Length: 221
Image (cartoon, rainbow, N blue to C red; front, top):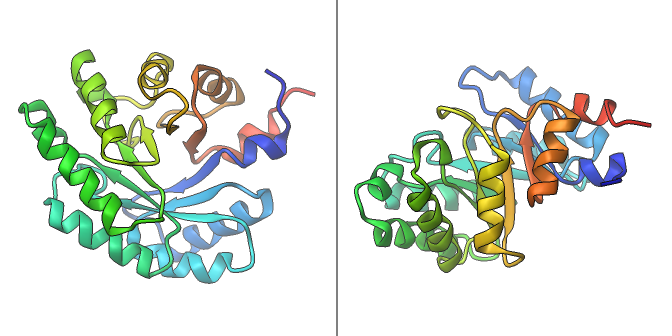
């Protein structure tokens, strides 16, 4: 697959989600995202307002990560957190599902939770993090289907804090279930141009990574 640096940049969510990220770290993140025209920065909600100030006048979006990284807060908490993030200027929401509820056999609860967040920020794309490393094949399939039914914009592989990040197999599985009806975000462990292209070729339409700059710099001539 032949792609340009500009095209790849517009697929990347430039990510800084460490608990100890400082103002200097977030300012650098935003400056890099602006300079390389990344699709968005992905940050914890406390930094959304600051990112708005840093990115005003650019095409870079701001993705707030909700219920992050465990997904174990209540549905009402996720709804409030998502609304607050959008009020502060987030242009996208990346929410973590209640993985324990899904694995306990309550997919309808998880679907209602996702739908509640989607409705709470209607018009703002919601990417739903399934944390695939914790799920069986059947659970992965169920999670993709319920996310689609709930009206989310994207299915997303992982937080980057689970047992492992994105895999080509998981992206292919997602693609086989949601087709072209949703975006697919691969995140976690994507560090090189080769890593990224494997995910894109498998069906990913957005990539979450903190290595976006090095990926662009390593595109073959």
